[in-house]
Image 1 (cartoon, rainbow, N blue to C red):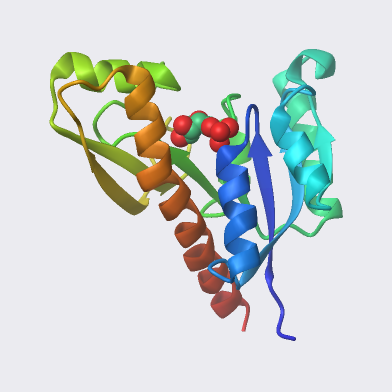
Image 2 (image 1 turned 180 degrees about the horizontal axis):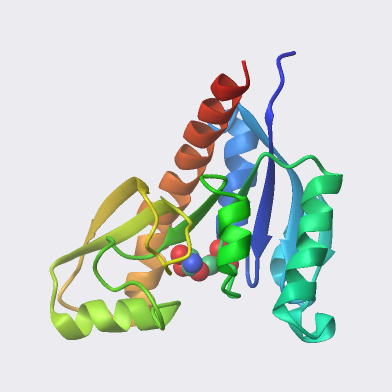
Length: 204
Ligand code: GRF
């Protein structure tokens, strides 16, 4: 069988986007890359259990336990190198990575953000806050974006976007769920496949 791109998924929470990647791998939507490693910034992240249930190697690396950003990133890099990782998917990873780290993995890190960038993104826009801001502004359409990660929060090149209509009775919670189901869980695996194909073609 031909080589696949080696993927690491970095998580902090429930891991529904990790699950979407695992399911896509099983269905063959993600076929040019394989999830080799899951790293959680929080040892209690349910995402670690999802990795375990699917036989994927997993580690918790906590910034608090590491004592500094530098040590935290050093431990992550050691794992990425040990597993010969080609690219990293940030799937609800809540720790901001340093400019040194993002430069080291230039065009080798992708992130899912729950809005149509450049709306409702950047510093402080994470989780429910993104959807609260969209509803407060009264936009009628929101969605999700997968982008490369650089030193600017949510500022890297856009790979895929998908729009989701806002309903008059939406709350931040209902909107968050619908954006996940209709957009995030679809475009993250699609983007992982596109990036896998690109990396493999560059290595030929
Ligand atoms: C998602 O909304 C994602 O867009 C954001 O964090 C959330 C992660 O959820 N970056 P999960 O852990 O994948 O369920």
